[in-house]
Structures are given as structure tokens and as C-alpha cells.
Length: 319
View 1 (spheres, one colour):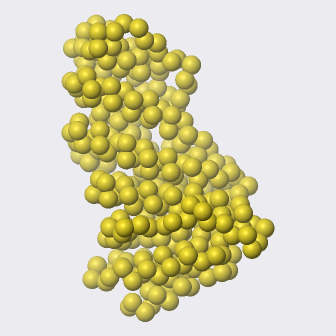
View 2 (cartoon, helix red, strand yellow; view 1 turned 90 degrees about the vertical axis):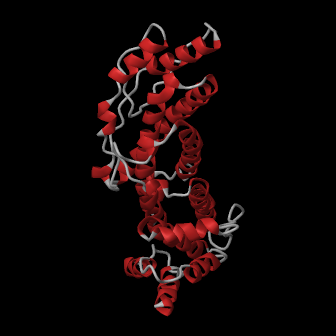
View 3 (cartoon, rainbow, N blue to C red; view 1 turned 120 degrees about the vertical axis):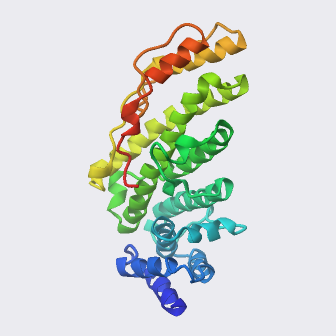
């Protein structure tokens, strides 16, 4: 079985300028999902392939690794996360062919994301794209301290993913398109967990200590910015027709929500001077219709009454 996996890995990472063959990826996934089989040897083969000077070989090796992260047993990413270092491709440049310059940029961005994906697993001890979602899911039931630790990790992973930044014309290349499809799948699952965690955090907001409120408010502001970037990323997927039916529609949250959070923090800090940046027109899944007034108890009651049920049912891609 190990020999077959080695052959499949080599076949998936040839110098032929096309995405890794589905059969080879299926064989490797089957190998990974055989729980008694070691993944270290396979990881070594793919890691060695990323040391090639050919952008085609390196890119296909990265796509193969990502495919196994998404579709393989979790022990594969667990093994990668345990490695001292993964991909050191931040200076990669293939000068041998004209296309190598543009493709090298994508390789540097893509390898950074895969590194961040592995690092995130090491930091929070799970693959956040595969955690259970919904009312009984992981992010909905985290306590405040763990949320404040986990959400920044998700933000960093999402930042690395969105930095891939391919436009529709660049997705005509089969290898870039294969990477983008995997990134799209990750983005939907990652954002679903991100959104659920943010809902949980905001639900706890009016019972937090001042320092936690300040940190949560900053996290929410960053959430708005990343949601806007994700909207642009999803628009590219729609334009090229990739998984169009699974792409969610992100509804808009009013400025009054951010103002309410600022208002509560200001009351804790005994400050009265703050402005709601209503000029920011970000699209988010959280939708709160009105600004609460009164003391913290009244604002907490308002938030509970207007917690966005629609966001809980939002289609954010396959589980």
C-alpha cells in the first residue's frame, strides 16, 4: 500500500502543466483514510516535491497536500502541524519560463495559507473547517476566554486564504483553478465557524469585563473588514461558475450594532465621546435592526431579543 501511495504521489506531481489527476488524488485520499497507515512517508514525498525548481511540480504538490487536508483523515493535518516547519516558499521564483513569474506569486501566497492552516491546527488543536456547526456546534458553545483565543486564529487563517487573490482570467489555468476550488471550500467552512463564533461572542458581550469588551469590539471590527473581503472573493467564484449553488448571500448589518457595542464599552470606561463609522458599508451575516438604549441590562435584553435567527440558518457551504 505504501508503494502504491508513493507512485500516486509522484504521478500527481509530474511536470505536465495540468492539475493533479483525480484518480491519483482519490488513491492518495484512500491511503490517508486507511487509519493504520503511516502518513509521514507520504508527507515527506510531497514536501520534497515542493523543493523542485519547476513551478508546475511545486504548485501541484501544494494542491495535492491541500486536497488531502480537505478530504483526508484528520491525522494528515495533525502530522503536518507537528512538523517543525512546513513550506519555506516565501522566496520561490521560477525564472525558466515566462509563466513562472506569475505562477510563483500564487505559489508563495498558497504556501503561506497552507502553513497558516497547519499552524492554526497546532494552536487550537482542531481543524476549524471540520468542526461541528449549528446550535450544538463547537463555536456556539465556547466560553469567552476560548473564543478570544480562537477567533484571532481564524482571522489569521482567513487573511492568508483571501490573499490568494486570483482574478477570473487567472483561473483559466487548470492548476490555479484547482487550488482556488479548494480555497473556496475552505473559505465557506472557515467563515461559517467564524460567524458562529462571532455570534456567540456578541451574545456574551454585555456580561464581559471591560478588557474583554474592548478585545471583542476590535474582533468585531476586523470581522466586518474580512467579511467584505470574502464577499469579493466569492464574487470571483460566481463569475467563473465555480460551485455557484453553494455560495451564500451575505446580508448587511446596520451601523447601529457597532454603535451599540461601542456605547456599552464607553459606559464601562465612563467615556461619552465616540462615533459610529456609519460610512462603512460592509456585508455581514449578522443583522441587527435597531440600536438599543438605556443601561447595560436593557441593551443585553435588546440584543437577546434581536439576535439574528437568519444568520443561524445561513447557507455557508457544505459541512
